[in-house]
Image (cartoon, rainbow, N blue to C red):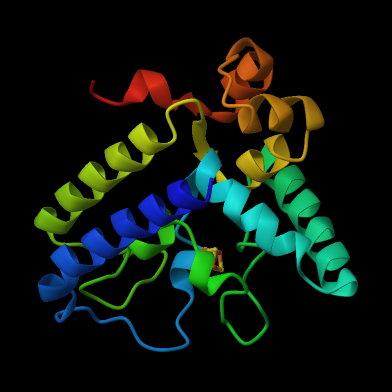
Length: 193
Ligand code: SF4
């Protein structure tokens, strides 16, 4: 798994380097957390979720308990069709898992200041680079899944699913019932051979 996390970092680093020339035009300012509060879905792969789960396991107990509570609340609100701030966003608008934040957070910037009426605007070339990086992430996580962060973290909290995933086995039927209703996609079916 360590080498897979290294490969994950390599995909992040490649995207960061390739997109850097475009980002010089970004209007993003320090302290803005629009992407964490209003931009909608933060989709992650199971491998990204596993790394986040491991970081959560190392947090102080109080913080971990509070975070689990926020994740459950976010899950319920999302079930009700609401857009809610990311549970990892802290009161000072910093990200609690910044070093391990998923690719969905790394790919976004905006050429203008965002609002509900003006969602993030990216260069077309960076959109394409992001699509290629997502395909690479799904290839790397070939026996895993992609979906909204709270749903993937929920799946990784289910022992039966976690054991199957850690064993490198592929049993889509185990997540089929949950997956259909929550927009979970099977990475194997999404990536090009
Ligand atoms: S993981 Fe961090 S950067 Fe990503 S949406 Fe949540 S708070 Fe924001």
